[in-house]
Length: 240
Length: 340
Ligand SMILES: [Zn+2]
Image 1: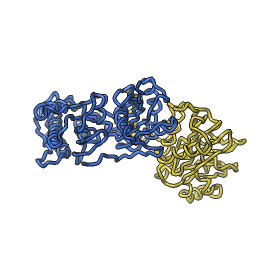
Image 2: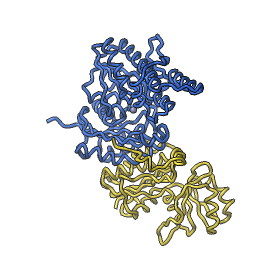
Image 3: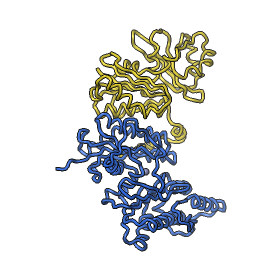
Image 4: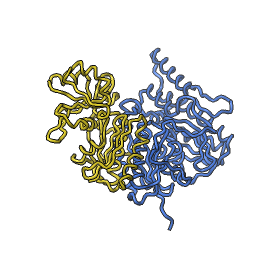
């Protein structure tokens, strides 16, 4: 099976090509440049390097969030369009799971984490079980303090992973002490090879209805819902 | 037999997700438009993040519907076209990303199209265009007079200094309690009332062709607020009629001035506000008297709002000129024509 994997959830962009479980190519760009400009040229280059045409692919695996809203939409739109237009399988994998999959040699609880601003984070909990990465704490948008309170109650070693972790490290150590473990700066970045690995097993979804997992309503909608019933206003989009 | 040129065109610059299939630049085989108006009504205007999310939900289905309705498949296509600006960056990016991906997947040329050029080329579905021509582009985001000396050649000769005409409609609509977008309802009310308030028209006698609607908007809001304070109820129909008369007067006055300075045989009215009945009536009346030889082209309402068919029509000209983009094409939210 030929898998193309894409992750543009945050500042780093990663693309990988995996053929029958073998990593054939991977590129990771961590320079702040728009994903829109560099994603498709990168895909094109990596496929070409492997003498593959886009139509040779069997499956597209995409990190579908959480993350930067604009960022996840670039990879998700590319992936769902590619899958629909070439009739390929499409799978979405949590961007947090992709980060967690970097931490391979541990029995710790792995907590991937992204800054969601105002002392909030996107975070989940993962653990390896017989070679499979299992989601044990569902991906959420929550206050960092709330996350740390919950992790303290679990009373077990936790490995934090993600490019935003260093800015929260002091707070995390204060809350969890020696139970908190950290990874190096390379494992903190998303690797599309890991995404391709995770996405190789997942069940394909429909590209037509596929959307990012934002894990958060927009502020405008949150405010509107305080005083309105969504059902009475739908449908929001109409073909005219 | 002449080969069919089939362009798959994308438009997602604001709150409409649209994909069309256009044959030879002048025939619409399909033009699917998914509008988000009902969503943004909740907020009284377009919320960019909500718009971007709707575009992602819609884009794949809209592509499939456009191909199915046109009864064509990817191997039949000649090229892919997309609006890359101006517009909301998050919205533009969905169309740009999807269009680039389709072009790449099927090794098709990718044609970047200026959204405003698309609005003007909507007139191509009415009749062939003759150059030089003048276009009045009026929408929620733009109020511009554009001169075209040749196909694909655009220069701005008049622009708004503050609000766009459509924006002014939405703002006074809010004061009248009319839900977003207010243009259609204000137009309807205006036809039931009289211009009794005589709001100011920003039409100095200098030769410039620029527009301004902020003075009118303030005068309108002050009038309504003053009446509220003294407990007086103003006639809504007359308010709408007076506002519309002032907007239309300015648009017609500046357009006629532009026609006097730039002799052309066709005047194209483009953009969402081109659907306004009051504007259509006043422009044809003014042309009949002052420029009887100028042909007024106003596209049908479905083609004056944002849609991908107009992008396909403009793309036909860009393709003939060999103006193509590669896989690194990005959205350019502030894209504009050059000023003359
Ligand atoms: Zn428009």
